[in-house]
Image (tube, rainbow, N blue to C red; front, side, top):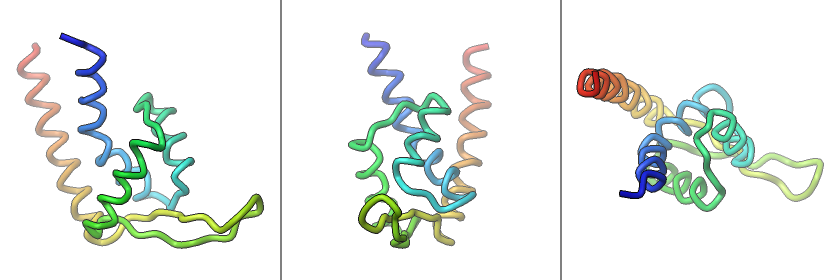
Length: 107
């Protein structure tokens, strides 16, 4: 068993919940989302985040605005949509259920 692979898969499974939670508070540029995730020990790289953001866009869970940048071309800032807020609420509820179930199983 490769424990590092298992840990990475667990993080990936929770990434959608974390990203939606982060942009629920304020619209963000992807590198700022990555910084927040890294600060939370949810180690993530651009190659993981951008495909996730694209899936969330296609699912109408997030949208974006272009904003001018002082240091280059305009940037996409992502925000949660009304559908995203509904999905986030469901994901948080599911997370609480799973957390309780895992705690019961391992105690």
